[in-house]
Length: 139
Image 1 (cartoon, rainbow, N blue to C red):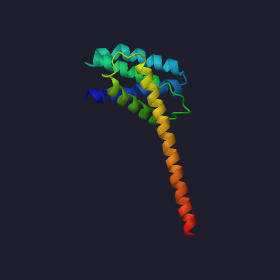
Image 2 (cartoon, rainbow, N blue to C red):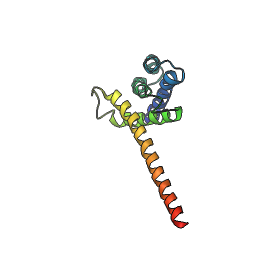
Image 3 (spheres, rainbow, N blue to C red):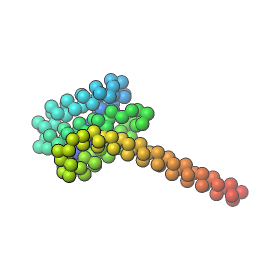
Image 4 (cartoon, helix red, strand yellow):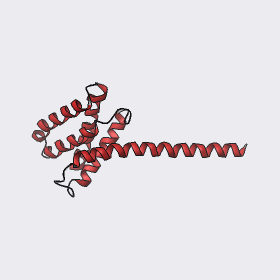
């Protein structure tokens, strides 16, 4: 249940930051600052694991600072938030106290998503090219 809360927080915080930054055109720093401030003020008071959720929201807000050309819509931002949540869960205990962890998770989440998209495009283009060559061979 705790992991589900972390992932949901990651997705929502990333989407909130992205919305403020890109959709409302307030800028990445402002968007992240608002999400971090509100999550730090409210999550620890309303949830038993609120401090952890606030840290996750901070991490995901860093990921939400991504440029719109790299993550052009909210669905993709949700995917980046999901990746950030999973990475956070995986490194929370082994890297406790390690400096720069949150920004690194955010960067890996964004770069991982961008790489995944580019790989998928290449695979689909190659598959399409193979299908075209098969069709032209059959003619």
